[in-house]
Length: 342
Picture 1: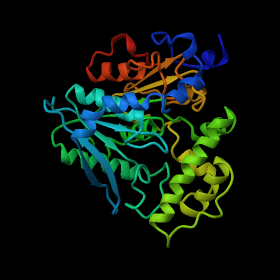
Picture 2: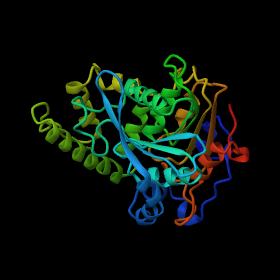
Picture 3: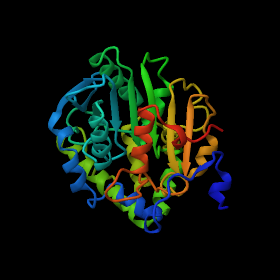
Picture 4: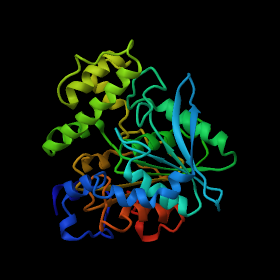
């Protein structure tokens, strides 16, 4: 038994058994977003995209967030929100893939863009950061007004999963009507994820730095009188620290990272059924954080041995294990796919 298995407080689910060539966590993580799968997924998602309409959600305090709503010809009357990870968007291939599957099954599907993600840098003057929870709660409230009487189910990937778990923890005080939340490879402890991105594999930090710089350039172009990022330099830690210092209310980098951690007592108040799917070999989300999640009767955690970060791919052509997991829960047929509560 390896150290990560020994430290995990949840039984390892062995239902996901990818072939040997797909057991490498970096292969899994890269395939989750790479162009290798994009053309096929975009072709399959054409009905979803063809049916979409843009909505700008009023999220409180003057904040607007963009989403795309796709309504099937034969609706079940159920609504599903799909939320991307950091520097992803409503057009990310993992979002399009899952959204199309839900659309085919009669869900009204909402693909939300977080602030400054996708082509939304012009919508709000202030810069995105991961502690902007009130506006995501506001987006859910706006969607509830748009779909009255329909409990909302949410699926989030990585940072999107982290956001939705925090939304679920605030559901009672925010008067949210949520059917369930499913988080795929959610960020648990941001400080540990930052270290993992710096050390796990050289390409990860460079990948995210490049994407972040493209986003910052778009922000500066949209608000030229408000931003000058010329002095923001270095890797992820240096960039984050400088932007926290200059463009947030947090005194230190540590305060900011702790602000969106979901360990400790952050999820203790969960009353909405919430499900986490994560893997022991995730190179970005250290599995040790699972032991520091609050125990809640509403929280179910499924841990696989393989899967990397948001991967869970056992075939380049078929559904991923994560997609089968989500569809099973949405159909209330989770059965053996669900892990145990510790």
